[in-house]
Length: 387
Ligand code: NAI
Image 1 (cartoon, rainbow, N blue to C red):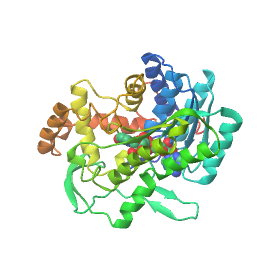
Image 2 (image 1 turned 90 degrees about the vertical axis):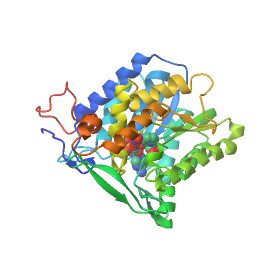
Image 3 (image 1 turned 90 degrees about the horizontal axis):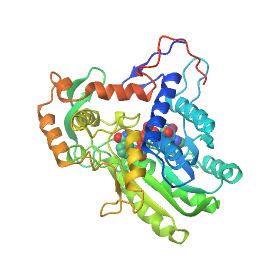
Image 4 (image 1 turned 180 degrees about the vertical axis):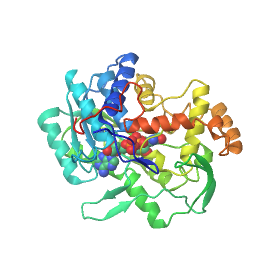
């Protein structure tokens, strides 16, 4: 079958197996060039198949030489439709990692469920050996509880509605977008989905199952961003969930102190992923951010961020902010970068957006997520939907 991108709003409903393999290969190559480090050897990545989680898995394998067990929620091909990108990414990663002599297996199921936690613990016990690092990189629209109740996350403000410029992803026009305030129920549901409760459940379950090594490390990813996006992100529903995630790190450090656990939140840079494209206003900010950071030579993607995490933030004495968080958003939030973005934000219109913002870079990253737009992949070739 010849596979083409089929884009609907902020999602692409097809994925290219060869392109996804290329994406993984490039990330492995980049990581190898950064050199190796001593570090964790048995890494569990929850949300391992795309974005920050995939890059974490790749970097753990090729920086630390770690075996990895991943958890993801992805769809294989049904013979007519392509698999999801995360599915192809994971197959490509597993094939390469195994060829290079690493253990790499993945559990495909709902990470929020008790069954998947149990399956993971059994797998660790049987085939993997105790885990010394747990990376929590889930980005999910909803969470189904064990009793069947489902909570959905909302991308809304709190208190007042918020209007600002936004990029219409259908036609690259700069338009005004208005985001309504969330109800109390929407706020608490978002915290249920994207806060720290499930992270804590995972860590507790891993200790209860006696599959955590002494002095293990666990990291969950977060975002803060600039004041510009506070109403939609940091001070909105998702930011409230992220504050809960941070509090969970504090709690985990107390709860499992005698086991030697260290729990961190790493505040990462805004990047185009399947999840972040769904947030209103943020894509325009990201396109401006890409342009300004590229001009200043400090732009990074997920793999560069995670390599910097391992090489610069966690190598030796951890580099933390005053609240004990890792800050990979340090370059994004540099005052010269943010001042330049604000200047452009005021000026940006549909007419000049291509000049002021990196629209092409935004879309390049977007297509790459689904395995499209790689120069050395021949997209006119017939490919099998299976890997
Ligand atoms: P992504 O959409 O690329 O990846 C999400 C991962 O979660 C995938 O592996 C997916 O299979 C998995 N997943 C989703 N629901 C699941 C479920 N029910 N069970 C098992 N696996 C499930 O997301 P991205 O952007 O890499 O986000 C990961 C984390 O990084 C999130 O916590 C996000 O808030 C954070 N972050 C993202 C930033 C960004 O700009 N993209 C910036 C800073 C932090």
